[in-house]
Amino acid sequence: MAANTHRLTILTRQEIDDLYALPRFTEEDRHAYFALDELEQQLVDSRSVAVAVHLILQLGYFKAKPQFFDYEPDDVQDDLSHILARYFPDRKPGTISVPSAPTQRGLQDIILELCNYRLCDADAKAELEHRAQRLAMLSTQPVYILREILQHLKQHRIVLPIYTFLQDMVGRVVSAERRRVSDLLSKALTTKISEQLDAMLSADESMYQVNILKREPKDFSYKELRAESDRRKFFAPLHEFGKKFLEKSGISNDSIRYYASLVKFYTVYKLQRMPAGIRRLLLLCFAYHRFRQINDNLIDAFIHLVGQYEKSASLAANDAAQNALAEASTDLKAAGQVLHLFVDDTIPRHASFASVREKAFSLLPLERFERVSNYMSNVAFDKTGFEWEHYVALSRVIKRNIRHVFVGLDIDGRVADAPLMEAVAFLQEMFRSGKSPQQCKPNKFPAAVIPKGLQS
Image 1: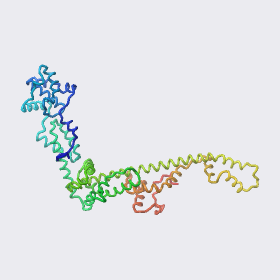
Image 2: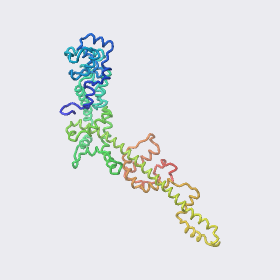
Image 3: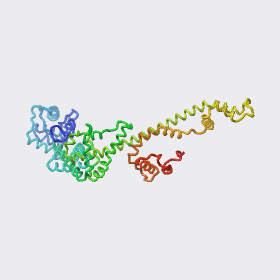
Image 4: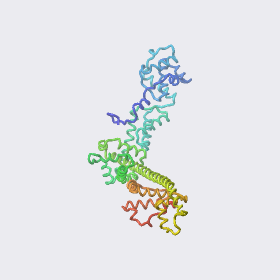
């Protein structure tokens, strides 16, 4: 609301000046806007010089901004000088007086007819308000309604009315639409939902509940995501109620977002002083919108963390492959010495295999045999196996960070009976019932989701 007034603050001072302030022309602008066609020249020639000058002046201003201006001669001195020099070079600016009020109204009628415009009279204002009422059902954002009204005026060639009229009209239709929806809400509210909405404005240890619920997570840490999950639980019943009510009431998504933004904009004190119906409408839209924001945040976090763990496992497997390759290369010399045992003349023919084996293990330790053997046999490195070893090492971190997010989200798919959705449903039901995978029989797991390459 504007300071010390009941009127809405819709536009900035600069935006109001752009619409209503007297045009400020450059010399190039004057050459364009004060140019006259044949009909305009005839109308100018049929009038006295003083009236003709102001006809050219007001016509030029109207072409720039389709409205009429009150001005003093000093305010338009440069424009008057240009018009006199261009059309009446023998006259001085000081000799041109401002026409009387009836004469000015006559000039306005001429300009309206020339430009095919009409004044915003009572009928036009009634039509304008009716259109604003329809626009308010699409969006109750005052600036949206005003800009659509300005576009309507331009398209239908209607002179722009004063700004205070537009402010009052937009304020009326916004308030009427808000009352319409809040009255519907008052009839639809249950006692439980009313109490939960009212509880958002209650204080707990010097902190209002709604201020806690406004908070956005700073990052994807466990603490922040756990708090976001808790906020989701709080909003869930309000969202479920709001989803049905808001759709039935005909309120637009844009209006929902706008009402939700007002909860962030107003202080708790201001919200508490509002009529109960309006206050609960704003809080319900905030809860509905915030629940969806939280969903997006948790989905983004889930995708980010899973991607992070996959990347970490892939890097760990790559490092393990490089280390295995380097160690196998290092052990090749020892492997060559092991092979030489088969042709070593110093080993008696009757020597036992156990003694030869013992000597081989002294050259190449037992735990390295398989790795070197695989390397020499060109056996592919089991990168997937190393990745899953890494997941096992990270299992506590993974469970702590993403299990509560996974459990809280409502996940759906394009194909209802797809193996992936079967696995999601199985795991969510298991976790929500407080069980762990270790408490379920392996043959109960929906294994169809597991690709052949991972089944081992």
